[in-house]
Each structure stands twice: as structure tokens, then as C-alpha cells.
Amino acid sequence: MSQLPKQPTEGPVPTSADVARLAGVSRATVSYVLNNNPTVRISEPTRHRVREAASELGYVPHAAARSLRAGHTRTVLMPTGNHPIGPLHHRFLHELESGLRRLDYTVVQHGSLGLDADDAARAWAELRPVAVIAPGGVALTPQGIAVLRRSGAKAVITLGPQPVDDAHALVMDQREVGSCATGHLLERGRRRIGVVMPEEPGLALFADPRLSGARRVAADCGALIEPLPLRYDEESAGELAGRWRTLGLDAVFAYDDAYAMLLMRALQDAGIEIPGETAVVGADDLLLGRLLRPRLSSVRMELATSQPLADIVDRLVRHPGGVPERHDLLRARAIPRESS
View 1 (tube, rainbow, N blue to C red):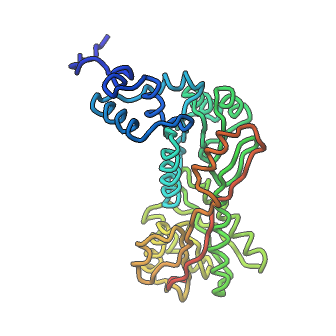
View 2: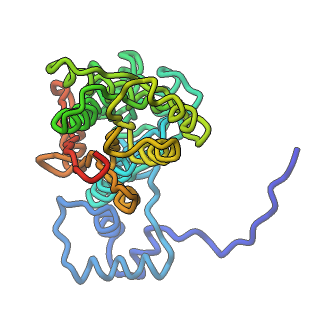
View 3: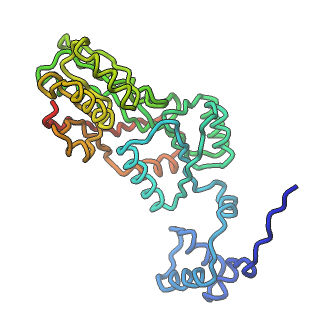
């Protein structure tokens, strides 16, 4: 059996009693200050003295002990999905994590790849989170939701294109992206529209509803929607561009800006004039797309909530047991430029 190397010690681990002695206060006061207890009034000079003592000693509260006293953790678990994260998702995570920290929650990301829905729920439950925000790539089941609630989770929340029964939902309805892009192309007089369907793993979660949104809008005016499978590489883009004129399409919604830039270059190399012969629209409104020639038309996606995301989670934790809530987060609008 291998042995861990012995690590040099820096002396005994400081305790709350050590902090209390140095600050000249009780251990209860130390606990109230360092755990940000809002129910006890403590003067600002005393708070400052306790924090200074804790800093000098290198003391931090013991999260597990605090959880035992409270009967639950302050951990919000955010499992990682098996799909790439786009710019909007990055903004969502940054806003949510910073807001939850402000409310004294600890945000923990948990790798869940390779686990089925119920195994993932059991793995999350082992950490005793007070809330779970599950990505759309992990399909929660009623059994998994029940396991999480029995383990002490006050709020089970899903984040994805569609809500899940028995759980609260933060919905980013990707159909809006497809509808917005296609609506813009229809306004420009295009009637035979290709929709890129990425072949990369995990992207179907977003691509399928975007295609559905495109078809919904096109059906109202009898326009054609043609799904176009595409890998994210130059060879695949070149092959599609090489047979473009046989498809009879006059526009393409290319899933997002990255795919749009890949395909637009391949179309130009094949002699397809943009936008004269084929209009191109992406999504995400990346700066790089504005530097192309022609500049890339895109769908800009923004978070649309009536209150901060962290406040929604906090309210669901403090008032568990209600009817599952749905919050639609996605607002999309077309940004017309030269490519369409």
C-alpha cells in the first residue's frame, strides 16, 4: 500500500475559542459574526475585531459542523452537463454564482458525466445540498427528485430548454432562437432556408428545439426548412458548400456564429455570393462575427428575469414545498448586418 508523504505541520489548527480569546468576545459572538447570522445585532467594531482575530489566526468556520448544527448545508450544487457552454450560459453562471455567494451560499460544481439520471441524483444527494440546479443534459426522474428531497434539498431546479415534472424550472427555450433567425430571413424575402444541425455530441439539446422554432415560423408562410447536418470542421463545411447549388436554398440559419463563420467561408470559397445568392444568419452575436466581410447577421440572446436569479433560488430554498415554478430566462432578437 502506498503511503502519503508526511506534510510539515504549522502548529495546531486554530479554533473558534482561540478567536474568541484574541478578540475578547464569546464563542457565540464569533459564530454569529463569521456565519453572518442576521438575527443577532452585533456592533460593527466588534464584528471588525472578530474578523481581524480570525484573519490573524488563519481561522475559518468548519462547514460540516455548521451544517450539523443547522440541519442542512448552504451548498447549491450545479452539476456539469455534457454539452458545450456558450456565451449566454457563461453569463448565466457568473450572475447566479456571484449572487448566491452574496447570499452566503456555497456554489459547488459536480461532474456527472457517465451517470444515468437516477445515479446522478444519488451522487448529488450524498453531498446534502440545500438546492440543486440540474442542467438540461441530465434527465431528472421523479425517483431522482424524491431522493434529493429526502436528502434535504429544499429546492430542485432544472436549467434547460424545457421544464421537468415536479421540479422548478429555469427555462431557456431555444425555439425562440430558431424562430427569431428564421423570422428575420423571411422578412428579407427568403423562402428556402437551410438550418444547420451540428453533429458534435451534446448540441442536439439546443439544435433540435432551434429547428422546431424555425419550422414553426416558416409554416405560417409556406416556406421550406431543410435540416443540414454539419460537423465542426473545414472538410464537412467544404463538402456541404460543394453541393450547395443542388440544394436550391436561398438562406441558412447556421445554428450559431461559430458554425456560421465556418460555413460562410466555405460558401465563399465555393463561389457562392453572400448575401446575394445565400443569406447567412448565426446566433450569439460574437464580436468576431462583426469583423467578417460581409459582417455576420446574428441572433442576440439575453437573460430576461424580473428579479436576480440568486434571489429566485434563495426564495425557493426558504419557502419549499410549493407548486413547481417556471421562469423563462431567454430573450432573443435578430441583429441584421450585411450577411443577410
